[in-house]
Length: 100
Figure 1 (cartoon, rainbow, N blue to C red):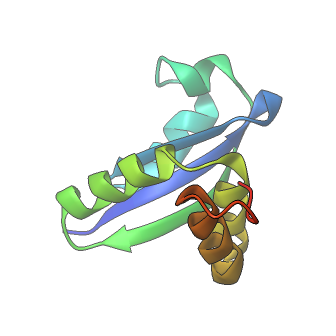
Figure 2 (cartoon, one colour):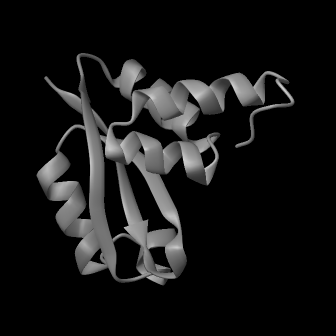
């Protein structure tokens, strides 16, 4: 079985990060507003990123990690800008020349 961590861009500029074992179904549920909670309250939503994982634990771990990221770091992930992610990660470790 395959699992995914995914990200949605929601009304108001918010990002929602989740994980699932059926990406197509879950995105459709979010877009339809049939899942109660954050995304239903922040329609419309747009699917912007996902990554495939072998286990649910890996997908959940990625979800948890990304939820803790700054907005700038999430945008860099969506763009696939690994250099920017690296710079932002260094800033978080206390380098005063870098900002998140």
